[in-house]
Image 1 (cartoon, rainbow, N blue to C red):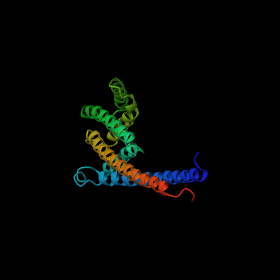
Image 2 (tube, rainbow, N blue to C red):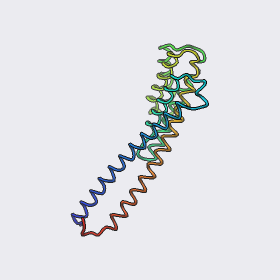
Image 3 (cartoon, one colour):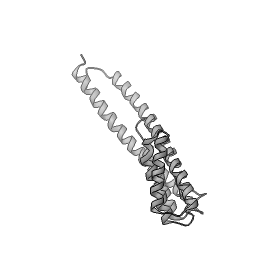
Image 4 (cartoon, rainbow, N blue to C red):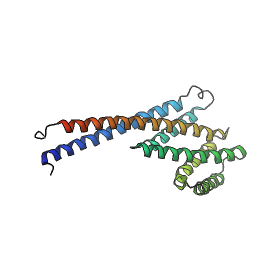
Length: 198
């Protein structure tokens, strides 16, 4: 039987550890979102050929990708990153082919969403349908808003997504490493503390 004082000390330690993990996760997520936004919206190589509106949209799109993949466990992060990339690749391929031939039309957007859903189901990735459909909708509508060089939109969104995913995965890895290190130190301190003291 574990003494009551030891149980309460362990519970208090777990609460502090959970709060610390939540704060660390939130702080790293915010920092990663800032890094994603700043790097994609201010890329020196792209800044001269991409209009300001596209830079802002690219920054937002990278932030969305970062949020999507930034998870509490490495396995969840990797799974989310693969889902985000496969969804974006499907949307990228379909939208690029369409926009090289046709201008934006609502029926074209709906058709691409339907084709993407069928293809993702057939290749065994039905869980990616929602993300792919959202990506296609955004790419197509932005192409409709900026019809000059509309075919660039899928390419730009793919680059933004890859940048956001990379930042999110790296940030999650850092967070998990710090959390693991902090948790092992906390457990070591609890084991070394005298049993009779609170």
